[in-house]
Image (cartoon, rainbow over all chains, first blue to last red):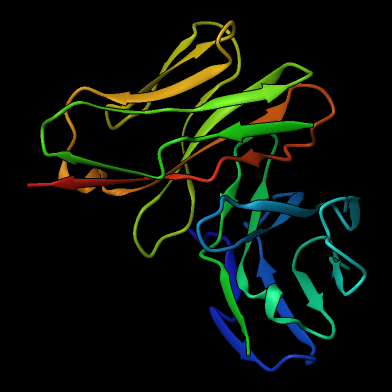
Length: 113
Length: 115
């Protein structure tokens, strides 16, 4: 069966550019999460969606980061005016109703030069 | 807010030896507890979880973890490790009420099993 799919798997960009990272969750999962994992750190929560709406975006570091999920399935994380400090692996996960059981994708590695 | 501490960043161990990966947490509210594992070149996956009931929980591949409320710990153990257990292990918590499945992770412990 299909798991959580993230594209691209790797993205190299220059400082100041705009990037989009896409997540396709497991079919039927209503909840979708974005995390960021920097080198040597655990995943850090960014935002989660319940259906189409952002239920909690308290982890977004600043207004350069934005995420959407217009039809309640695929989600896109958008980063404007990228900075070198944005370099990390961006993880997406989806969930049904089981507490704490998130299904993660393999991540999108973003490198900002 | 919650925080999770995994003091050991790396744990080397020989095959068939026992291992313990330590996890302590801090929270002002009651939490569910989890261990996630990330094998090389794979995504994070749930290893085991404590929601309620017996404080000792087990995974299908021989790991176990015990919830100790007084010590706010959830250490992961295996009596005899295998080469295939080499991976990074993350402890995580989420509030029982109102958490929305938002997990707070520790910094991870790299388990390296050697022959």
